[in-house]
Length: 156
Image (cartoon, rainbow, N blue to C red; front, side, top):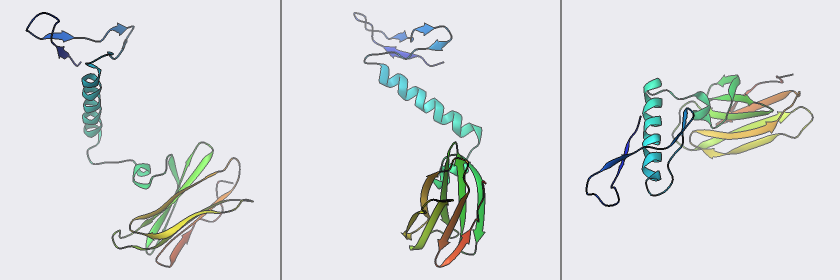
């Protein structure tokens, strides 16, 4: 797939360097040429990702929360998004029109526990906040500029 070039010990020409192959998995080289091999691999991965879906990002990348979206609540000035991955639930509040700093908050609570929140003056999003929620109900509240949206209890 990729060939790296190095100068042979005594000759003036260039000779290809191929990493050793064990089974069907290529083992990266060690030593002075290893950085070029990793850089080539990184560039190839970036090109491959760009070719899959140009301009598209997973929703979790835009929000900062891992996992898949389980609840989304829109309100006049923003959107509350809740994600789940394994035993954890994560929430963020996104401003409908990012730009100027304004008061924003996000709060996530497991039934029977204390709420975890993030609030302040932000331009785009408040959060992420994360709680461990194994077999427990969860509720989330998000607010932007005094307007809020709440999920109610879910994941029960």
